[in-house]
Amino acid sequence: MIQWLRQKRFKTLENLNNLQNMTFGGVIIIKTIYPTNGEMLRLMRRYRNCKQSTLAIELNVTRSLISQYENNEIPCPDHILVSSKHILDMEYLPTCESDNDEYEDMLNKLFDLISEDKLNEAEVYREKLSVIRVFPHEKNFNTLFSLHECRLLFRLNKVDEGKAILSTYENIMYSLNDIQKYYYYFNEGTYNLKISCIDIASQSYKKALKLRIDMHDNHRALKYNIAYCDATLGFVSLSIVSVKEVCKSYPKGKDKSLLFWSQNLLGNLYTCIGILSSSEKANDKAYEIALEKYERNRNEESKLFLGSANFGYGYMYRRAKKYKLSKEYFDKAIDMIPKTHNNYLEALFHKSCCCIEMKNTSSCLPLISEGLKLSKNKKSYNLAFKGLEIVANPNEDSAKELEEKILPLLLKANSIQYVLYFATFLSDYYKARGQGFLTRSYKMSELAMSIYKKCLEGSEI
Image (cartoon, rainbow, N blue to C red; front, side):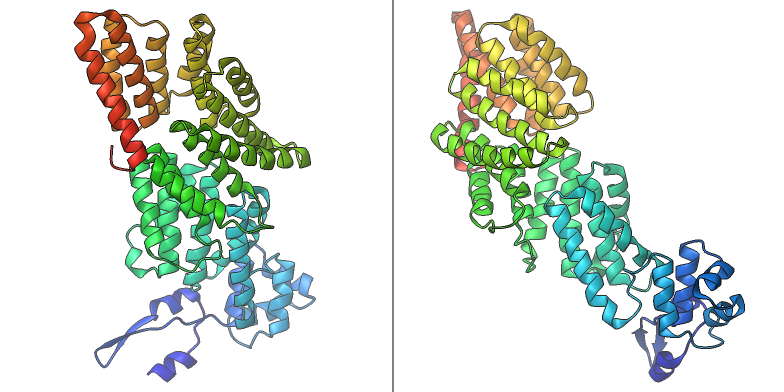
């Protein structure tokens, strides 16, 4: 029976798939049966919507000969298949055992390009490798390609398209091997990060890390994402440990995009806990990488890098109460970062804070107005700008709204840095109001202090 399965040829791949699972002696035999050269030829031709007559002309043979190949009436020679791959622009399609290693290498190349933020080049590889869909029997390659494509779509901010791919694997996780599960959990984490479900994103990334697959990127991108989630959730000390590990293990000669974001995050983390000397060192390293990229190629990506590096300095100088210098760097950041990027909203928020802390509230109102407009679909940021609107012109009723409505929602959304900022503001505001507000002042002071301590300790907030 097994020998028969190995030898039997079928005219269509659909027929093949129907006989992949068979019972023999009470045992289910799961067998992948590959198409013949002729069947491959038909699948390739139909994928490109090419007529038999058109392909025959290109191959300098008759249309009837193509038909005989495709129907397995006569064997299709290897050279016909190879020539057809070239004519149909399918050189990357693995049609024999020797092609598999090359295709796998190209998949790894696609993964590296996405990790290194070389997205234009990655899209070219994606298009070339997508021809694997011609052969649904190549389940392993199809799965790996789809999961890499999903990762690329998320990097391109095509969230709905990426989610559609991810959804196809939700109910068949049991059938994936560990490497495929690694990529699935990575993409699941990225999706949840994109929709601001930070705690769920963190859980997904940590599931991927637990698999401990020997990956060629040494988990650097994964560890950075975990550090970013930890930072957003307020686990600052844990985040510093993770991101320092990424920086320390970064190989020489590797594209420095991820290293830039790691140093940029590290600088902002040190600023958050007030260790400004360490913040400056990390910001200097990030700025050096960003400037190098910008001088080499002044495109949108390099502008984002340099703008984000300027944001790091602006945040640091704001924490040092050097407001004039801080505003200058935030202005540079706002000029260079795309309005669709979260760092643009961060720069607007912190520049507004500078104006408020300099007692120049009229200058911050247009910034807050722009922030509210741009953050309509970003709940945490929208709440932050609503809170900032109150801080700019506080009164007893608005302060109560900030304390009782906005702060709980920000806590629920894990927007810890904003909760810390507004709790500190309310503590000072109530204290200045006098005797009747001291209890509220103490309550807000306690909240701010507990958050700050837990940021340092790495415990749950």
